[in-house]
Image (cartoon, rainbow, N blue to C red; front, top):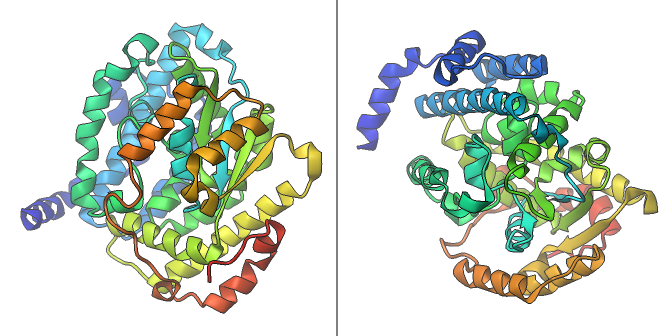
Length: 399
């Protein structure tokens, strides 16, 4: 079956166009709309499409999935803009005291995000509403919205395209979604370099002001919050550490949570996960090149995290979470976080967290196995390279 599917895709490859004008026209036709909002998205989209063609070595599945995702985001932009024009009060929504979870990847941020989202008073962007945000979700129908079931059907493709994905990352229509899936709609986002080999886009992206991405992020949250509010947003993306100052400018009341883990565990786990993501879409994987990229990229992120944390009281509310503590006693970590941010942790929320942990035991889908050596990384060299980070946060090495 997979072979037949692959041949069908290969035969249709010339038909899978990645042309900006054609994609926009297709989105216009699908939605019946023609205003995608702020035109600043054109430049990043142009660079992204050029990089995909030049760098990504997409296989037929990758080409089809990439086109589908870009088209979905363009359609979402058109519909969000139309909703905003029809309902000007959406723009009046205030994103008050949001919690942003960030730090190096593979440090427990997904688990922590899911736990904080169990608070009935909080608001977390769920996978279904980020994929299909229009019309704006409503509190009364939020948990039985038909888009939940539509998204569940769409996510079943992951089992076919990326066998073993659930072993590495929690995913489900009702689970919280990372912010890169929102900033992806601005096309200034770490989403694309997570999923694809886009070297030239990444180099361009690193030089760009991230403000347009965070401004669109705020618009997206206003849209989701309008008819389905909460007391505060709980948000998450490791890539936020590359734009902490911009995040503060757009969200001056933001409360920051940094998650930490020994980099010698982070690097191979991140490389393995990235290989799984990109490997589904590309014809070429160079593990040593991938390992070097992961080390260089997140060393820069760790440096920015240390610099931000070293500025003292001017940094605003910050809480540090250590992976070992989170895995050992998740509820205790949540209690400390609520205390740090002067929030009330109700018995109802504690019970919801206990239920979630019981229903989602660690390694329920199998153990994620990886090693530094698989990606050409030397243990002693990486220990030296990340010493500034482990020393600053007093991280005990695992080995």
